[in-house]
Amino acid sequence: MLFLGHFSFAYESRLASRRAEPWHGHFTALAEARNVDAALEKFGALIHEFAEKHDLLDDVEEIYLDSCIEVSSIPRSGFIGQVNLQEGDSPGGISTTLPRTAEKNAVSYHLEPEEQEADGSYEPWPFVALKKKKKKAKAARAKGASKAKKGTGRAKK
Image (cartoon, rainbow, N blue to C red; front, top):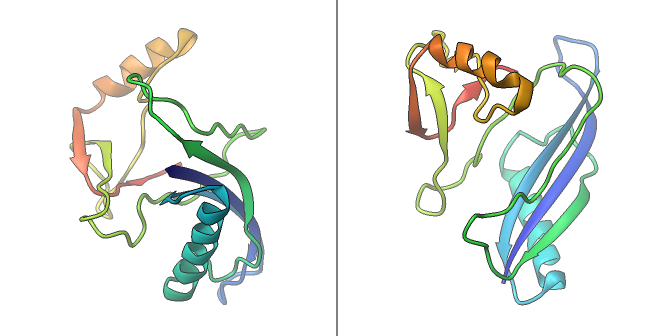
């Protein structure tokens, strides 16, 4: 059985060059296990191993399980596994897909414009525009051609 785990955390950054700033984050993990208890054990071990080997969670002390989804089958049309709504404007942040995951295990695809900043970053535009936002999305797409690309992009938020 496949299990999809959604996790969240909050922390204060401890960069030497700046005073401590509050941050928060979310991530998703996928595991195959015989039951939910075994999946939760795998998620715990995966998170500990990731935190030991990589610096992305260096300042994080606690991680919370928001949900664990047991996927017994996937409808032909797919399904949305998690929605997170936050009040207020986005203060910006950092987003990465499949951090330190081998390409033999998973590959990420994303849309990005042909022209980018020197550091590879770019201003993202909507993938799907709903109701009133259709005109805005069309205008954004007209600014630059795009195509699906393999790998992780650095979208400015």
